[in-house]
Image 1: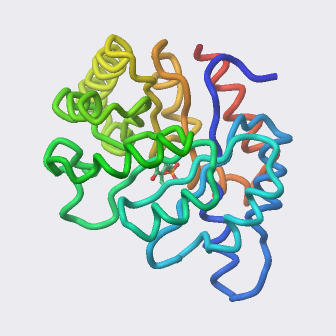
Image 2 (image 1 turned 30 degrees about the vertical axis):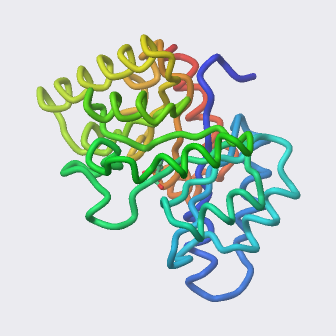
Length: 242
Ligand code: PXP
């Protein structure tokens, strides 16, 4: 059973473990299938320019095997654009990979890149791929997303995840306000990065947020309790917070 808040499971770090030995185990595609059976509404994978975890053939196999939507995280490069247009995943989330593409906090600096992102958003959208921009919960970045006509933004929750006490409460307020601002402007807000069993509930409770993308913690926790239980517990915490 899934609630109205979707869970996207990021399987990158299954590939990280596989690549540590250079073989084909553990297989991120198998992990994606287990996640799908355990309450994931979508699968997220980041094909990095250096292929440090997910590789091109993983993407091909994911596209062939999945019956739930694939969200491809990608840098705004010609190479990644060509790959996305060839595979046509359900969604593509544009993320920063180089320092100069980031805001000080870590999201994509959509506001500071002028018209650079326009052809990426336009070409992905024309291919029926739902474009998302991974940005800080900052009104300037949301304004850039509006200007670029991105249908989705994903708020970077890394700062929220790493803070505590009053500082975390302040960052949560920034995310709450940003989610409301995005919705008011017709943009669907998502959130992700650094989310865990301990910190997910306040983010899941934000009514405008439609999707959380969670990876590292779920894969790490699977070492102790298995992937099915790890995804299932996250799903239950999200549904309970809603
Ligand atoms: N969303 C985006 C856009 C990301 O780049 C990442 C990290 O790859 C995540 C979500 C998931 O973050 P984490 O692995 O910390 O859960």
